[in-house]
Length: 160
Figure (cartoon, rainbow, N blue to C red):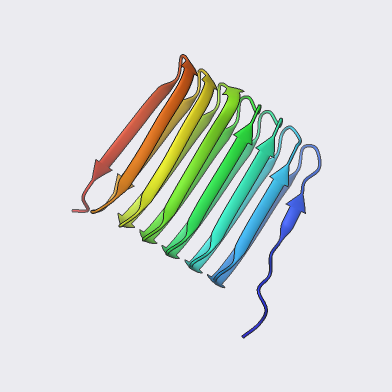
């Protein structure tokens, strides 16, 4: 069995970066303090962790895509205006979280397809949009907003 690989990347201004991992027990981390950053993590397998943290970066795009079981997705932004967070998970027993802290005019969306998935979304700031869409059975979600002018969208439903 090959050793685990833990990529940790510090991005430059106006950069695009992508991490792709296939297998089990992988960790993908992208950390940035710059504007105009595009950060993508794609993982296929089980028990993987995808983590994106954007501090002070405006106009940034963060996407985590995971397929499999028991995966964890975490995206955190702090003082990052006009940003977009998208977390997509397909499978069972996955956990997704998105946090917009003290930013404005940003959007966080978690999409989960499958069963026994859970998510936590927090939007703190002004005029942010938060959404959680879950298709399948036995899913759970929490969504909290603090500030002014925020909007929330939640959708849960069984697979047909």
